[in-house]
Length: 60
Image 1 (spheres, helix red, strand yellow):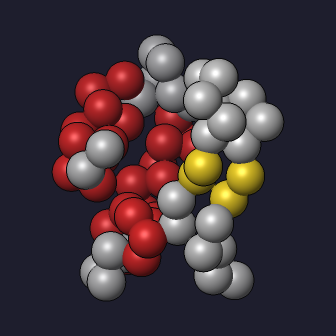
Image 2: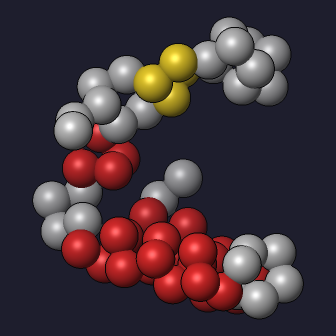
């Protein structure tokens, strides 16, 4: 999913689907991700709706 779509969904659902404090933090993270590194950290699923998946290319 594109970051701008994620951002739009978080903004749209802040206070209902998403806790307002957590949403504010997530929007800040997205806004600070100028090099689009969040997209590079992907999550591999096992083909079962994400259950049993693992993170790849995680940069810490």
